[in-house]
Image (cartoon, rainbow, N blue to C red; front, side, top):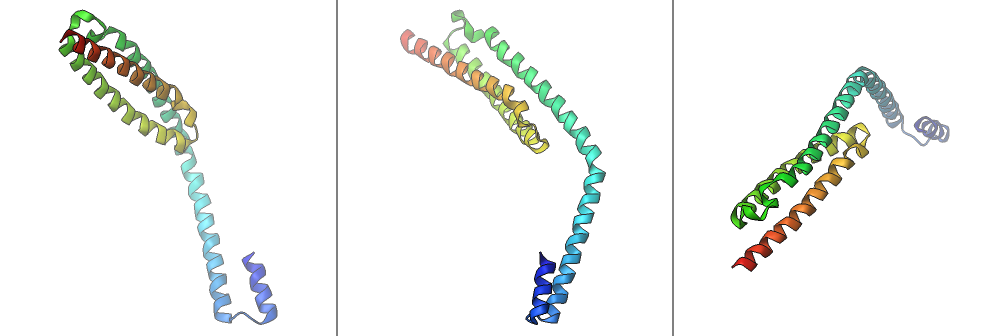
Length: 151
Protein backbone atom coordinates (compact mmCIF):
# COMPACT_ATOMS: atom_id res chain seq x y z
CA UNK A 1 0.00 0.00 0.00
CA UNK A 2 2.81 2.40 0.87
CA UNK A 3 4.56 1.59 -2.38
CA UNK A 4 1.39 2.33 -4.36
CA UNK A 5 1.02 5.66 -2.60
CA UNK A 6 4.66 6.54 -3.30
CA UNK A 7 4.29 5.67 -6.98
CA UNK A 8 1.12 7.71 -7.19
CA UNK A 9 2.81 10.72 -5.57
CA UNK A 10 5.79 10.41 -7.93
CA UNK A 11 3.50 10.19 -10.95
CA UNK A 12 1.71 13.34 -9.86
CA UNK A 13 5.00 15.00 -8.87
CA UNK A 14 3.44 15.90 -5.54
CA UNK A 15 5.79 14.13 -3.16
CA UNK A 16 9.06 15.62 -2.10
CA UNK A 17 12.04 13.43 -2.87
CA UNK A 18 13.29 13.66 0.70
CA UNK A 19 9.97 12.43 2.10
CA UNK A 20 9.73 9.66 -0.47
CA UNK A 21 13.24 8.43 0.41
CA UNK A 22 12.45 8.57 4.12
CA UNK A 23 9.26 6.57 3.56
CA UNK A 24 11.19 3.95 1.58
CA UNK A 25 13.69 3.66 4.44
CA UNK A 26 10.86 3.22 6.91
CA UNK A 27 9.37 0.49 4.73
CA UNK A 28 12.74 -1.31 4.67
CA UNK A 29 13.05 -0.97 8.44
CA UNK A 30 9.55 -2.36 8.85
CA UNK A 31 10.39 -5.38 6.70
CA UNK A 32 13.61 -5.92 8.64
CA UNK A 33 11.74 -5.85 11.95
CA UNK A 34 9.14 -8.22 10.57
CA UNK A 35 11.84 -10.66 9.49
CA UNK A 36 13.56 -10.44 12.87
CA UNK A 37 10.23 -11.06 14.55
CA UNK A 38 9.64 -14.16 12.45
CA UNK A 39 13.13 -15.45 13.24
CA UNK A 40 12.68 -14.89 16.97
CA UNK A 41 9.26 -16.55 16.82
CA UNK A 42 10.81 -19.65 15.23
CA UNK A 43 13.52 -19.71 17.90
CA UNK A 44 11.16 -19.42 20.87
CA UNK A 45 8.36 -21.69 19.61
CA UNK A 46 9.87 -24.89 21.08
CA UNK A 47 10.32 -23.20 24.47
CA UNK A 48 6.78 -21.84 24.34
CA UNK A 49 5.43 -25.34 23.70
CA UNK A 50 7.42 -26.77 26.61
CA UNK A 51 6.28 -24.02 28.97
CA UNK A 52 2.71 -24.37 27.73
CA UNK A 53 2.71 -28.07 28.65
CA UNK A 54 4.25 -27.34 32.05
CA UNK A 55 1.56 -24.74 32.68
CA UNK A 56 -1.20 -27.19 31.67
CA UNK A 57 0.19 -29.74 34.13
CA UNK A 58 0.45 -27.13 36.90
CA UNK A 59 -3.15 -26.05 36.32
CA UNK A 60 -4.32 -29.67 36.40
CA UNK A 61 -2.43 -30.17 39.69
CA UNK A 62 -3.92 -26.99 41.08
CA UNK A 63 -7.41 -28.14 40.16
CA UNK A 64 -6.83 -31.42 42.02
CA UNK A 65 -5.55 -29.46 45.02
CA UNK A 66 -8.72 -27.33 44.95
CA UNK A 67 -10.89 -30.44 44.93
CA UNK A 68 -9.00 -31.79 47.95
CA UNK A 69 -9.28 -28.41 49.67
CA UNK A 70 -13.02 -28.36 49.03
CA UNK A 71 -13.48 -31.88 50.37
CA UNK A 72 -11.42 -31.01 53.44
CA UNK A 73 -14.03 -28.45 54.47
CA UNK A 74 -16.28 -31.31 55.60
CA UNK A 75 -13.70 -32.40 58.16
CA UNK A 76 -13.06 -29.02 59.73
CA UNK A 77 -13.91 -28.56 63.43
CA UNK A 78 -16.57 -25.97 62.60
CA UNK A 79 -18.77 -28.67 61.08
CA UNK A 80 -19.59 -29.97 64.55
CA UNK A 81 -21.59 -28.11 67.14
CA UNK A 82 -19.34 -29.37 69.95
CA UNK A 83 -16.57 -27.22 68.50
CA UNK A 84 -17.98 -24.10 70.07
CA UNK A 85 -18.55 -20.68 68.60
CA UNK A 86 -15.12 -19.18 69.23
CA UNK A 87 -13.14 -22.10 67.84
CA UNK A 88 -15.52 -22.40 64.87
CA UNK A 89 -15.09 -18.72 63.98
CA UNK A 90 -11.30 -19.00 64.25
CA UNK A 91 -11.31 -22.02 61.95
CA UNK A 92 -13.62 -20.30 59.49
CA UNK A 93 -11.34 -17.26 59.41
CA UNK A 94 -8.31 -19.48 58.78
CA UNK A 95 -10.11 -21.33 56.01
CA UNK A 96 -11.15 -18.05 54.40
CA UNK A 97 -7.53 -16.88 54.46
CA UNK A 98 -6.43 -20.11 52.80
CA UNK A 99 -9.15 -19.67 50.17
CA UNK A 100 -7.90 -16.13 49.51
CA UNK A 101 -4.37 -17.46 48.96
CA UNK A 102 -5.76 -20.02 46.52
CA UNK A 103 -7.61 -17.26 44.65
CA UNK A 104 -4.35 -15.35 44.21
CA UNK A 105 -2.76 -18.48 42.81
CA UNK A 106 -5.78 -18.96 40.53
CA UNK A 107 -5.28 -15.41 39.19
CA UNK A 108 -1.73 -16.36 38.22
CA UNK A 109 -2.91 -19.52 36.46
CA UNK A 110 -5.72 -17.60 34.76
CA UNK A 111 -3.19 -15.15 33.33
CA UNK A 112 -0.92 -17.92 32.05
CA UNK A 113 -3.79 -19.99 30.67
CA UNK A 114 -5.03 -17.00 28.68
CA UNK A 115 -1.52 -16.21 27.49
CA UNK A 116 -0.99 -19.77 26.23
CA UNK A 117 -4.46 -19.99 24.72
CA UNK A 118 -6.33 -22.40 27.00
CA UNK A 119 -8.39 -20.20 29.36
CA UNK A 120 -10.98 -22.94 29.87
CA UNK A 121 -8.53 -25.04 31.89
CA UNK A 122 -8.97 -22.88 35.00
CA UNK A 123 -12.77 -22.99 34.96
CA UNK A 124 -12.94 -26.08 37.20
CA UNK A 125 -10.75 -24.49 39.87
CA UNK A 126 -12.68 -21.26 39.58
CA UNK A 127 -16.01 -23.02 40.15
CA UNK A 128 -14.58 -25.00 43.06
CA UNK A 129 -13.37 -21.83 44.78
CA UNK A 130 -16.74 -20.17 44.19
CA UNK A 131 -18.39 -23.18 45.84
CA UNK A 132 -15.95 -22.94 48.75
CA UNK A 133 -16.84 -19.26 49.19
CA UNK A 134 -20.54 -20.04 49.17
CA UNK A 135 -20.15 -22.85 51.70
CA UNK A 136 -18.00 -20.70 53.97
CA UNK A 137 -20.61 -17.96 53.83
CA UNK A 138 -23.34 -20.40 54.83
CA UNK A 139 -21.34 -21.97 57.68
CA UNK A 140 -20.19 -18.55 58.89
CA UNK A 141 -23.79 -17.30 58.89
CA UNK A 142 -24.87 -20.41 60.77
CA UNK A 143 -22.24 -19.90 63.47
CA UNK A 144 -23.13 -16.20 63.74
CA UNK A 145 -26.74 -17.25 64.29
CA UNK A 146 -25.70 -19.83 66.87
CA UNK A 147 -23.62 -17.17 68.63
CA UNK A 148 -26.59 -14.78 68.75
CA UNK A 149 -28.97 -17.51 69.92
CA UNK A 150 -26.68 -18.73 72.71
CA UNK A 151 -26.15 -15.22 74.14
